[in-house]
Image (cartoon, rainbow over all chains, first blue to last red; front, top):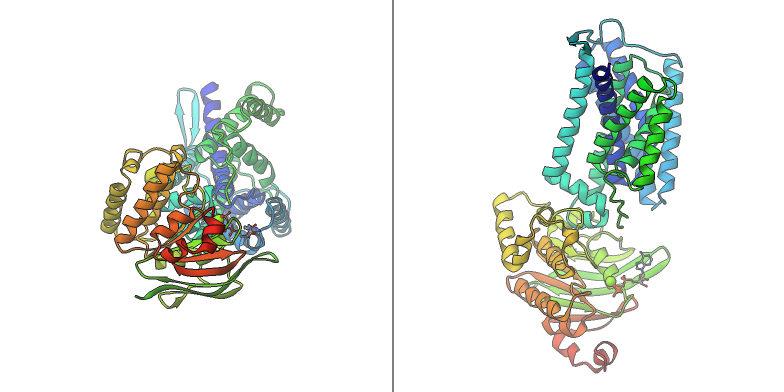
Length: 293
Length: 237
Ligand SMILES: Nc1ncnc2c1ncn2[C@@H]1O[C@H](COP(=O)(O)OP(=O)(O)OP(=O)(O)O)[C@@H](O)[C@H]1O
Ligand SMILES: [Mg+2]
């Protein structure tokens, strides 16, 4: 039983981490707690479903197209909402509240367009292959989910560490003003970050949609809370921290559902989170840095 | 002599408060020019406007006869106008090496960047020893060396320095000023903002004194150094 649960936990945890990564990037680079990230995630899910249903795209192509759509959505949110607020030096809470508005708008729109009921990928879209190791059953789709999540995170992590653009993003995270004085196009990288974060959120949406094979207009809400928990636990803006915290939350949730109470899984997971934060208020990798001008 | 930077009637406001009230000055190519004045006179505001971080509400900034007043900060850096901002301008969460690499952000010539790095290490050997350390763990003096070294990595045509000697021990201040002279002798034009008025005027060919957002005195460094008005206000009588 345990190996089976560990596998489920790894699947769920890696998607959480992927979701939280976009959230973390937005917070780290733009300094915005983007509460529309859950809705972007939902849009990613619907976009993939739409591409499969109407254009009969293969799954991988539907995933990439959904990432492009949710990336553009992230970019649009930055250009239309966050940028004007930046230009007016709006205090921190304002963009956060604005993104709540975006989230509500997007989920209402999804309800209007697709209806409130659960939608599923058509028969045969999701690979049904299964491998058996002893008494552990591994669904092919789970392998795909874990592999895609970890690969995307590894690429991003390496890019941030090793490339000039990655260094520039970390420079902006510390001080947009210093970054600008180095010749970094700060506004341009804000837009790039908003696109990438949206695409990551959309990818997570597609993967969760595939894992549970259930897509609803409100599916972004619970994962948004988990995303917030993950970035706090991971130390606000720390990529490595979100990865580990995402996996941790997946494990906590699956294990408590399996061994404690199937209804109380989230409560137990969030309770543990609270206890950790009591001991380490700045998160696992907490260097809570006050950002310079 | 040719004019590298020409500032005409520059005015900058914070909200409704005019911090810089229409100042004009010129930088001669290849020279050190000092901009001195008391706290709050508007020196940093002027430099930030030159770099495009603050918008001019009036006036023009011409760099090599090109109007750069409305350019974005990164465009201005690309033209070769590079600033070492006030205070500890380094990126504390990045390593020394990463800070230096970012200094060359607007450049693509790999070979030239490698040469610049060697020159910076020659100027500040200590940076080479600390290359993989986090910049935030450097001493104050080392951080200032890093800030200057990083600016040089951009291969600037004009270096803007905002109080490079701030908060440093007297011996280190000497070092920094000597380094500035060396850098200048290699042909780089420097605009130096300083509280350390005596030292700054000593190495500057030309100097401007600003008070509450206006240029009140302009002369050669040597003349200003011996000007009784400067002596009284800034050199302790
Ligand atoms: N961000 C800001 N918002 C509002 N007013 C500001 C801001 N920054 C500076 N000021 C004001 O503008 C004026 C000029 O400030 P500035 O920083 O340019 O002075 P400075 O000459 O660099 O002084 P110092 O030698 O202390 O660095 C001051 O009156 C200051 O209070
Ligand atoms: Mg100043």
